[in-house]
Image (cartoon, rainbow, N blue to C red):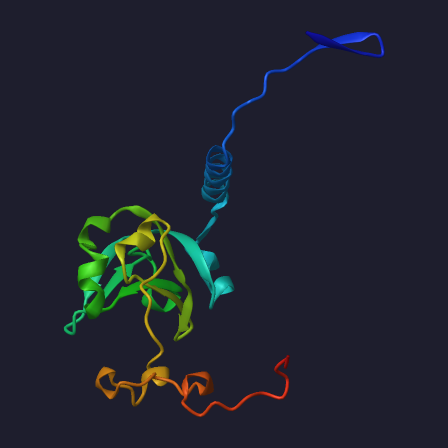
Length: 178
């Protein structure tokens, strides 16, 4: 059966059976692939521009050094570059050893590392706290120690003072009354 629209016969088009889940899934899949395709990794020479930002840095790992306390450093500068001229490094703290994994396997490889760029002694630094940073994932969450001062789970109270959680029910004058 067709419809006549200004002398043009249009055949009826069968209705498509798209469920909300299918449409949502297609939108989600396309946004994830678009996000992955737009991820930009910056060269280590530009890391200082991104101090304080969570970015991806592309870098070659030349060597690995470990301090007595267990802190590991990934050397990102060629052997010809002096320490004074090396402007970017990667550090992995001892408490992150299990989550960061075997860093020895990175020696001699080009890597993409995601993390927050810090400035330490006129050098840019990213802390490698978990292996997922090598695959576009975020750093390990670390709570701010200043906010946890004086808090103990045995106290049975919130770690911060929140008037909404107190027993004193002071009502605001801005609250709507009915």
